[in-house]
Amino acid sequence: MTTQCEVPSRPSIAGPVDSIPPESAGSAPLGCGDVTTAAPAPDGLRPIDVLTVVAVADVTPSVRRVVLSGTPTAVADAGPTVNLLVPRVGDPAPRWPRVAKDGRIVWPDGAHGVSLRSYTARRQDTVAAQVEIDFVLHGDGPAAAWASAATPGALLGVAGAGALGDRPAGQLLLAGDETALPAISRILASASATARGVALLEVAGAAEEQPLPAPDGVVVRWLHRGGTPPGESTLLADAVAALDPPDGDDVFAWVAAESAAVRTIRADLRGRWGLGRAQHHAIGYWRRGRAMSPAG
Image (cartoon, rainbow, N blue to C red):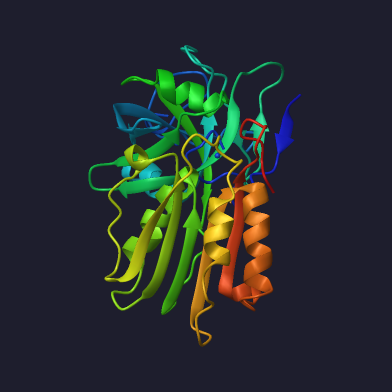
């Protein structure tokens, strides 16, 4: 007997806080470190992909970047938003789930110790066959615990990916906390050189700022919450509320942070800014007081 769950079509928590969708160099049979590509089993279920950690670096005091290796195909499929299957710390042979033809995750019977989390890959390099994922280390959820202990050779599963929900526009508003930095970095990197707007980024302090290249017309503004715990500050919502809505319809706003803050900003964008559904994407990447539970 197996149990099944749907892979979400959008990220539950797409950022690097213990918010988030292959074994070392591609697909592998469940419960082993073999990294060769395997065909679906007679029951139609295919193995997940499993990536292998090749490097770990702390880019700020609270953000750890993990570089994972796999086949070019597995790396290409691991983003931009990716469903990660996170094993227990120290588990040498995780009981991985498998994936049905329709994308459902099929979990093994009984205890397996693998958690499903949604993150955004900061970078995918199919030539080097590597993907980089940033993990925010505050909190005690399974992904933060795994990243804190990660060393080269550790395994991380992947079971599906999705889009960021952004779209090109002449005027941009990007707003997020630490968990949204990988996504915002990708959006800025793909933005038109003529784009204008602002990126509002809430972090603990100056030590948490990261290099964030942006078009000349997009201002990057860091908001420091100081000693206020993550998820308890109103800095991000206040900063959006202080902005004057831009003129014209060529506008897109992308927002991701703690769920309550996002609800406040979404209401402002739909009300005072008058943005339609096609002009904004606002998603709660995590909930205060809950270790990476889907924010929905």
